[in-house]
Image (cartoon, rainbow, N blue to C red; front, side, top):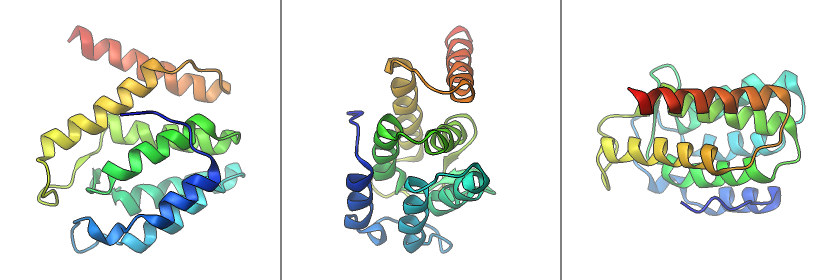
Length: 162
């Protein structure tokens, strides 16, 4: 995947341009919530709002209670990574890193919702791209974000030695 930076305006434009209803999902998949949750993410400025927005994004893109994500992640992952690379706002970057942590460490594809690939291929896509992005990026961020990145790298090392 190309990990290009994306401006906040381009992020919003892309989020609004994509037809989220084209993606499959279970009966509780709400494509209209994707635009709202990702718009709130890009506009996040206050630490007080972070965990609500985090939860809204995870719920719009999957089932955060079940620890699953829907097919929309195929289009959302590059957008979110691009925003992480370019956002000047630390709460946005921190929220995205927390979301990527969930998708990497504990979330899996929602079974039966993928028609263009199987669940294993999608999980490999998500985890592989997150790992590649984290390991190939030169990081200079807040202490708490550097801690999350360090945790990722420690986990990658454990996976490699297992």
